[in-house]
Image 1 (cartoon, helix red, strand yellow):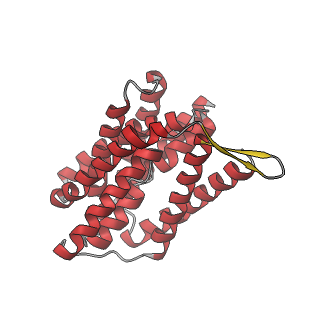
Image 2 (cartoon, one colour):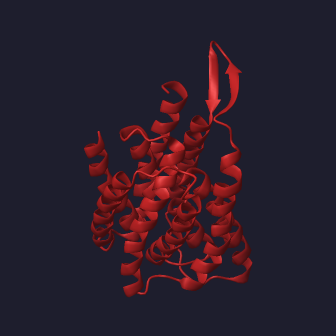
Length: 265
């Protein structure tokens, strides 16, 4: 199963390179369901994997001048605060067994179940947003839209820290809607923000979580290959098609995780 997981890691990178998002959306399910890693550790690993892979993608967008640094920092600073709040203060306080539901038989609500259900719900919410909003807006950031951008940055950071995801697939709609930048520039800016969020979240957890460096570095190597492929494909796919295509894909994966965790866990 480990070789299958490493093969699928390529698609994590392709997703990041093609749409600027979806790294952790794919990485966490692969780590949990294919490589049998506990969800909390999988979210920890995904921060390293996505952070390193996004950095490779950022370099290409830097050369093409497709990153808005002003907007990125306006989003990233509150986002980083959210990541640290979730990883350092909130997540460690969640008990392994939260409570028991007395249904036909006792149903344990565990930390694992909570994280995976929250993860799937975020995927479903994001997929609907991306499928319905097919506009590729342009323009510059305005003062009236700065506060919503900052608030969403903090919220995205908190979710990123909590479930190891919620980065790009929430960042891009925020950048397009509130910052009014084109989709391809939003992708580059998203990768820059993801890099900062992921690395700081990972470094903040070193020492608290066990690390299988061989597995982690191998998985990351394959995602790095994928982002190079995805970055090249992104130049050939119309911007108006990127979001809805990815949205339908996220909808399918999110539905699968939700059904599996509730009915077949």
